[in-house]
Image (tube, rainbow over all chains, first blue to last red; front, top):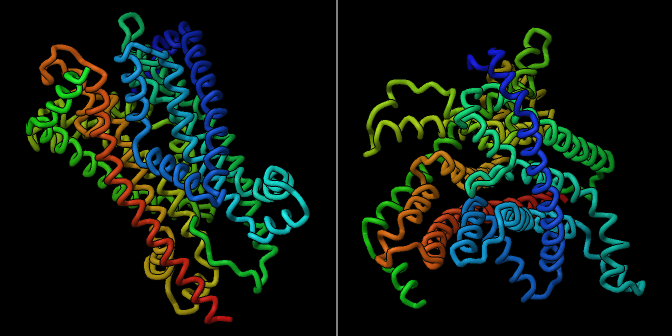
Length: 241
Length: 258
């Protein structure tokens, strides 16, 4: 804790500010590509699990269950070591993007599935009866109604994804956390624990906090609106938080 | 090629390696259970303070709770593990050999556990708060009209209902904590993930082929994945069962009411 007030330690961090910035950019880059990958996977598997076809639903179920019930760290180690020991090394950042994307893709798939399933069955039937095909139904009828249910948990998943980029450390990545750790343990730069961790924490916080605020505001507004349109006839059971 | 696979599976026939992995599993489960239990205690306090300390005298506690929850929710667990490894003091009670671990291992385990507990309690605080918010305001009024004071209202009326509402979410949080506990492998504590990593890094000695092969990666991580999957899937089946029962109960309630 003493290093927090030591000018020397703060100067050390200031001197190496470009290193921190580089780590921050690597984290952001990983996060952006992983978010894109997870959105694609989430959309595909979310639609598969609401398609009503046994085979597609089964595949989506297996994917979601398997990914959600094993730790991300294990998946990233598995991917990285399996690739590098078999001689097809794909690089640390790429392994990170793929495994983080696949991991959060499973969560996105569940979010999208829940969103689609919250739309009453009649909407699909009405839309088909009006001559919409599958894509048209999804795009014009279902998506606009379910987006407000999907978005808050989706943004929460993005926050978790950004936090989970720290798992790159275990395979020797160069993201913000790993760079901070090698900074505080390095031979020339060592010792400035307090300031370095504070800077890293603040950098993560300024990215994640607005996003999670946004998510909870949306969610609260949604709940408020639901309460306003609450009628006895459509009374729903109290939802778990 | 086949020889490599046989050598890798051969590793699993050694009972010493199995025992090593299973002990790691046991530690994973114990660490997660402790983190969740203490997380519920701290998290409930945080949630109660954040939700109900509105009077100007205690407002500072409310802001402290909000800051704690938001800071821990929006920064990665690994950062807190690193911070605790450097800064967390270890009481003498934990700073010696126990459970067949060396002093270094127990102190590291203690520090890493503290990080996991701090992180988990912020998440659980938000879960408990969701439960508190789902208790209708009429319950407070009813309790007050029956002469309960604030503490009694909380302990006898509000908290039991709030916990009942969030049992499934808390159970899913155990799954998340078991997965999060694998982050402790980064500082080489003794849970499942780090033990599997240790075995992999010395697999060339155990599998008898003299070097580490792809098959070792598949066998060892496959084994760890299977263990994690069995534990977590069992828990998620329980969660699903409780949810299904509640849905059923809620729909019968609606029918009876109608």
